[in-house]
Image (cartoon, rainbow, N blue to C red):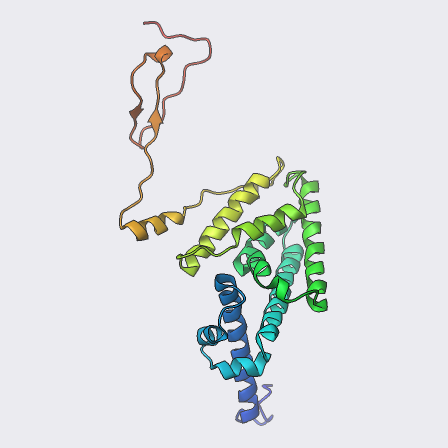
Length: 267
């Protein structure tokens, strides 16, 4: 039965108090999302009026929910830490291998801008007990993923939790003058490339990388107005193979195989 059903098939109207609480929750969520994006893009000292404008609410609504800048920053960090922890738990429970869980978590943490937020506002929340507790749980799960993936042979033996954290820190920084969707695609692409470089020799066949389109081509095309073409393949012939200059082959032609070692062409 619906919470607003009186049991006789009649739906009671939603009270003003319930509607106000619902609006307040939506405004709070919008403010936190807007603040997280603004902090990553412009730093922790971004004007609060800018945060309110992005959220589509008045500055008074921001102060009613969080009191001041410090209260807003703390809640952004706490909520973000809980979101990252939820992603780590889901990856660890739902994926069949530790390597799959690690890849999934790293990519989702990249989507959330996990390590991009910490350097910007981390110092504004000094040793907050709730943040420390949640971050510790994330570190524990990440350690299990790394250790498990190494034991599977899917991750190089010299890769550590610190390497994964540094990877996220370096690659989740926002790119200037790039739209959000493109930033997300580029971040995911380079996280995948880095993870592929960390993979061990016994990586499962299902986890091997597939060719990915490079979204950076769209950036160049948008800025220059020209189609970015791939470089044609070149085939060089040295002096021992008859000399001659390097020539270009159309892409539809395959590169001819080299003769076996020790076999020389007769002039």
